[in-house]
Image (cartoon, rainbow, N blue to C red):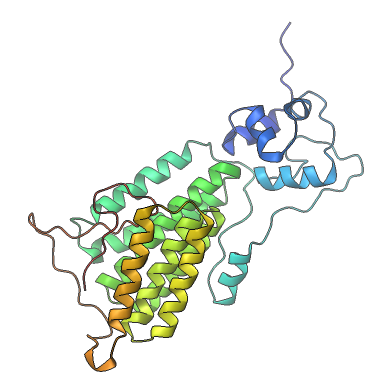
Length: 301
């Protein structure tokens, strides 16, 4: 006799959201593993209201889509609107998707999307910024699609890689293409994606990058305000000595730029020179997630 399949909808959503075992999901929800086993049985009991809402948010689908049959015919509300999404809407940004699609991507999509993100960061060493920019933007657009098709840990992993992609695009727009207005919008999107990833170190990196823009315009108070916010984010995570040193370097550069309006260089930085074998253009990676020896460096104006 074949073994009962159980609640396939819930099991599939659990694995797709990055929880490979029932115990992993139980830990994320703060319930016992026996409860998760009951939910994945042939006749899953309807969860208690608070737990059911948490389960729906975590896996990105309503309870009925997860294989539960409502005893009342009422399905709890889905989704959430984060504070960062509210801020993004206030400044005219398209909010990062918060709803999962009916069909979720597998957990492996995180590694695939991250791999492409790392490739774009490596390409910055050698590819002309104007040529790299549209492709990197297209990669970010793909990330937004994936956010709507993932949930749980998988979604947070995609959001983190999306934040790194926006950081790369924002750096190109400011340091290379000399488009500060576009860079501001892109870096705010990086901050929003970092919030969706629940990654305060990525948030600190995004905020510190935004400080360059007012500093190059001589607006010291605005630049320092953003650096204070960046340090606040850094304190929320386990900031490495490298990240803290990088924040010090960014703040020092901002102070130098704003020391005296008469001594300021042009508001916009000159495009960095083309890389050579002796002096390659620094990789625009931030030190929140260093993956090269140049992780803490930035293009010199």
